[in-house]
Image (cartoon, each protein chain N blue to C red):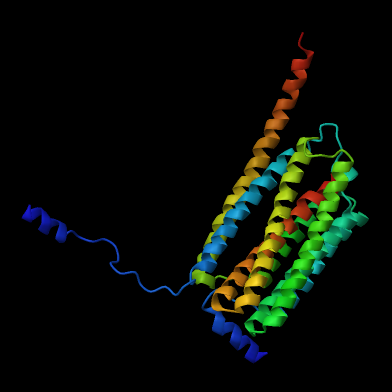
Length: 124
Length: 208
């Protein structure tokens, strides 16, 4: 194992680190568990409340994305002198703005348009 | 004339006059990561479009009528398995074992093909039932989002075959290792996007 780690490090400075067999296996087992539970929750309807189920499976998705980032994409604060982490954080901020912004604006637009449409139909 | 020439000669320089040495390909991984981040933004836009339009069925079929979660579960398994087999390809590449690397790449490609076949079967089934992209805003945004991911997987497989040919001809050279590492990031990134797809589109669609 130690000899194995050594070969990893000799390549690590040239580009991204490659991880180890143990790392890939841990990542795989974690993501299988984190995939199976949301599928089971939805398929069996274990939680009665749909909104609660939605929040739980979203939480599982976030955790699984982090697991993939760490164990498969080998993200850490040190790779590429921190620049890939900086690019990731910047992208995540943009993604959050795009998603929440779009959903928020369009939801309210929809909510405000509906009565208007209704009124129009009642007009002579 | 002479004075302008000396002026030009003594003009101050505000940049490094000599590029300091960069090893070939030393910045490729960061550049490829930046590409992946831009790809991530494309998917964010498509997710936002699906989030906004996903409830507009236009009196057509809803997710509950169309999605088969068993099939999606099998599909997800295929992609997860392909992720770890690519990881094994990278580990054997580190040890310089050409044949084993090729074998793991082939296995990864086959899992990718299985994923694509199941997805195409699902699409064909939906279209056969009249749930075409033109049917409703929900289906337009669904096919755009899931189709874009499928297109990425398709190109990933094409890239994998290309690299397997490269490795077969030239072996695990420094350049080929770098290319395989880029494809590794691409492949694992597609898996990350799929986590979003099966959670937001399929699982949450069934909850609606």
